[in-house]
Image (cartoon, rainbow, N blue to C red; front, side):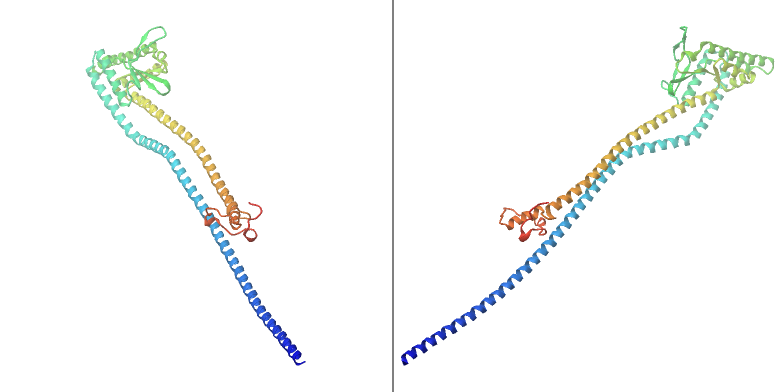
Length: 402
């Protein structure tokens, strides 16, 4: 009985010890599990915090990268536009500079010509007076020698042509040979050319024999008789010129012949003795001229040539300006097209940037998402093109790309 009791007590003690050990083990395991759960929760919280920090940093970097791209694109567009404007300005300057120089040279020439006109007219008047005095002196030495008178008259006429600034062979012809309608051979002394194909005929074969005798005769009836003979000689020469009709035989003639009397005194004496002489000569299509009048007429011809030259220069400048305007119009059209191209290029760049790095489903985020799925390429994209924004869940790329 005692043995059984002892066995029962031993069994009870063993069961109690086993139960106590199990209870202690359970309590120990529960504490370890609780600590493990707390550690896991803390680790999860730290992981979430690090993920948020990484996402915020990546988003800030992407934003900075996009801003840098925009700045670079704007700077490139401005630099390109400035270079194009500079090039176009240089091109325009190279086109306008020659025209400006020609206009300035023409203006200076025009001003200089007008400034010198008064001095030139005064010089002409002094030369005409000098020629008149020389003609009066020579007339005294040419008595009765018609051949010498003719040579002297032609020499005076040549001096006047040179004094007027005309060039032989270009502005006038000497001993011009032509033919009348009836076959007669005509040789005018001088044919002065005018712009537009016009021509002025000058004849200097005037006899001064009667005038020389008139100047040498004493006052009275003898002198009056010689003066009448001098007027008659002039009228005979007018009729002779009228019959030859040089004006009809020379192409482009103004229709009149200038009858040159090589001396102021013989001219004035004939008109004083016969005031109707100029009108009668004009009716026969002959114009009487003395050295002064002829010099002014020749100077007029010279001025006409100068005006014609200036007119042609103005025409050339106008034609050049018209060509330049056409070229500038084409240049302006190209300039406008270049501006449109620059703006379109900027718009295309912004669109490509959005497709590449920004917006949902951009190309860079999709490629980076593939790396997170296990893709191991042999090269990496530039860090400046790896924004973290707009990724799909858990770093996976979205279903569609922009």
